[in-house]
Image (cartoon, rainbow, N blue to C red; front, side, top):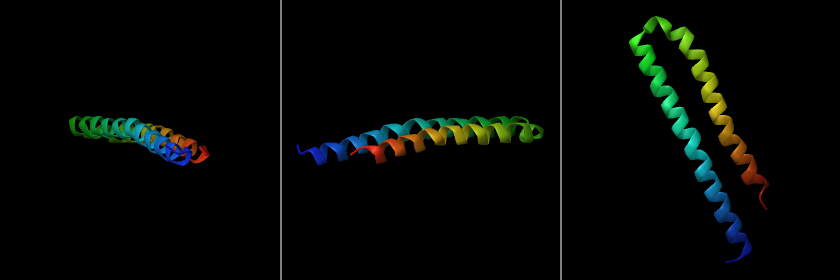
Length: 73
């Protein structure tokens, strides 16, 4: 294989692997938050802000991976 095709393949693998973790994490986070809100609707205010913070931290991991992919040459 040529060097360029190896770089493209490595970029694809990095993005696929790094998207999997945050995707699963955010899905589980929102599922558990909706379950908790369904059980106790009065706790919506206490659940919503930590849920959004957790989603932001999980999304940051995917953004870091995107930066790594853009730095590969």
